[in-house]
Amino acid sequence: MRSMLKVVLFDFNGVIINDEPIHEQLLEQLLLEENLRPKPGEFRQICLGRSDRACIRDLFGNRGRVLTDPMLDSLIARKAKAYRQALESLEQIPSYPGLQDLIFNLRASQLKLAIVSGAMRSEIEFVLSRMNLQDTFSLIVAGDDLHTSKPEPDGYLLAVQRLNETFADLQLQPGECLAIEDTFAGLTAAKRAGIPVVGVANSYPFHMLQRRANWVVDYLSDLELERVRQVYDQTAA
Image 1 (cartoon, rainbow, N blue to C red):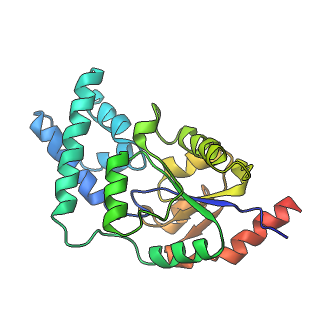
Image 2 (tube, rainbow, N blue to C red):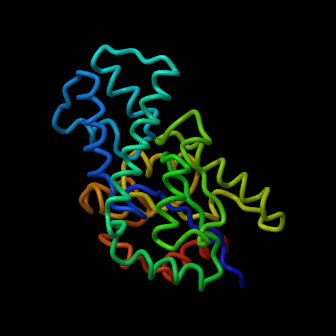
């Protein structure tokens, strides 16, 4: 009997790359360059799990600075350039223990893999290339593809639609996907799209993810794929 789990959808920042401290630093730098003062804890409250567009708009809006679309585009481009420079200065891309093994096991199980993220496509592709993962994912839905940000479900729904367009025989439904997320915004987005979700405790403690996710793991290496697949098969039976 073929498993009802067909696709695993990865978040990017905080799941594939351990770069959230870099983002926080760059956003603080952006505010200072615009003569605005960063506030402690604001990054986690406003930006974790959300796209740069949503995050920068809200950071500036909270300080009474309304951004036109060209101004917002310019700030996003400045941050993207600084992000690329920050990563290029690193000898190795910071990732999470267990990621490579999990990807190996998922591919060995004939599951398709995709990325659903608010990050810019250029950033995702650069990082995947540096990590030798550029051929791993069938599809990337990036922040450039969307006008909305997580916790809205649009990115996940677009991924399902595009996978069906790419693989005609897949006939994929949201409930046949598994999402892997590390933030409240990401977990909510997957749930709203009708996609079961694993919360990995990279950004929040285990106990804070438990009510929001179908499964929670401390590390990606703790994800027991066979047990997860059994739940999908029982649901379908």
